[in-house]
Amino acid sequence: MAEDVTVAKPGRSTTVADAAAGDVDALARIVAVHHDDMARIAFVICGDRDLAQDAVQVAWQRAWQKLGGLRDESRLRPWLLSIAANEARQLVRRQRRHSIVSIDVAEVGSDRFDPAARPAGHDLGAALARLSPDDRRLLALRHVAGFDATEIGRLLGMSASGVRTRLARLLARLRTELIDA
Amino acid sequence: MLDQTFESILGAQLREYAERGVAPSDPRAIATELIERRGASGSGTGRLRGVPPAVRWLGIAALLLLGLLAGLVLSQLGDDPSLLVDATPSPTAVAVLTPTPEGTEPATATGPYEVIWIRDAAAGPPAQEVVATTLDGRERVIRRIEGEFVPWPVLSADGWLALSARPTEGEDRGTWHLLDLGDPSRPAWIVPANPELSAAAWGPDGRFATLAPDELSVVVVDATDGSMVEIGPEGLTGAGPGIEWAADGSGIVIEAGSGRSVRHLDGSTTGGYPTPGLRVDFCRDLPDECDGAYPFGHAIVRPIDGTGETWYDGELRPAKLQHPVLSDDGTHLWLLLHRVDGDQHFADIARLDAPHAAVVVATVEVRPDVVGMAFAGWSADESTFIVEILAGPSIEPTGGGYAIVDTAGHAAHLGVVYVLGLTPAAVADAWPGGSFAPIQTTD
Image (tube, rainbow over all chains, first blue to last red; front, side, top):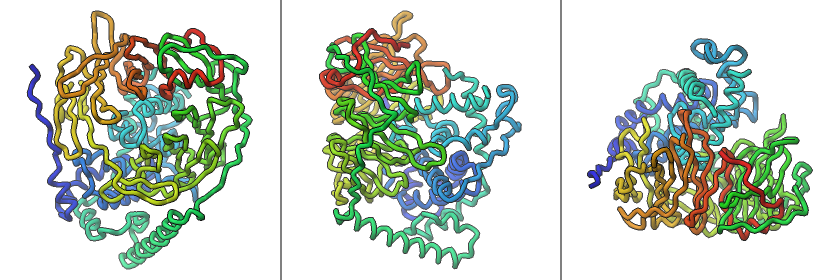
């Protein structure tokens, strides 16, 4: 006999509804929970903290305007992060049309991608800078937001298979640049 | 195969790198500012940080005025067909696109469908091969295409293939190449494209839609005659954004207000396009997925109001549920299950026409290192299925290839390639190309 099924209720329904109705406290709680994650995603795509903060600011405005229409409140986090990712991507593309964006290539943490795994050459920031904003968005949603291929596919309008294929090629390219180079 | 060590290191380093994007923030101040500005356009205001408030509001007002003017222009474009772009692209013959081999007649396949896919050519200059594989283990090359293409092709139901080419160095736009697989002598249509965006889709009547290079319009090309129109991109679905054709091919689905509409090719809009009525929630038995929100192995069908009804709660155990998907018409549920029998692993496909009424309709043996499976597509008549095999040991399984199976018991396996979809054998066999030979690409 199958066990009873308990269907999880959306956890932030009251907060989202209140925020959409203009409750500052409710909206502040949502911002507190998600703002930093949005900034992390945007930074991986922009490679520049100021640009990333700008993207997040615009993302919040877009999200705020549409918050009341969010049908499935349990999907608030992927919804917000995808908006931030898209705004970051758009901002980089707009900037690039007019000038060359200086991607922050200062090295991470230990100053090298991984002291044990990569002998020489490039660092992560430089490798990211050579990717397209779309590819950086894919990496950010996978490895920083932690979404699986199915979720990313749902967010970006792609098939999960397509996401996996593209991620696999991206990882292979990064491996070549970061370790095999 | 990408190893777990590299993938986990990369993930950790990316997360560490991403921390540098975090700056001190005041959630309440952000919330207050958002609420005070309710209704203002968000676009561009980020660049006003640090500017005195009076100047900021002047800037916002200017942006609103610009937005209003842009809206007026776009609405004019939408309302007046004479303003629509009618730039019929000349059917440019593309030197890099060469149909090969020529002069060979295809054999006839068995089974109602063939899987169409793309692989890198094994020898010679950079090229890709479009391949048709039957479910009795034969394949043939339909077209060899020389050149560097983004692995992001899209195949229409009637045999038009869209391939995206990256821009050459110094260019800021790419191109889509539209090829008729049924006529190798027909030159490709070349459509300017956003080089990085994958948003593109074939409509049901042979029209191709993609975003313009500047993303300010959706370009729609009729592959039969190369005529082209542009319509506004506002409201495209998905965060990508994505391009979704209306089921009748009358236009592109957009989100407008609280509902969905169709933007037609003459720029007009019709509201009331149905929202997706149902979705399926479930959790595979993987760590960190769903945070325990749903019971493992159950499939819960939900309408958009958030209520839910369990359709499957493990009746086919010990087979493990991998992927439940609603049928295209939303009337029934398909389940993909992983079953282990001794040292053999199987993908079972079950159909449910009502809750708790699962019936296995197809089975295929899969490789033993499978760690997960997912539906990658099925034929229009739901007789043939493409199953993606996720094989370890990577954290995000990336390889394992595909198993294609039909309800008559035919099955074929493909390696890690780009699968375009299933095409009726009667259609695919009419495409010129090479003859069938025993399948080359396996796991």
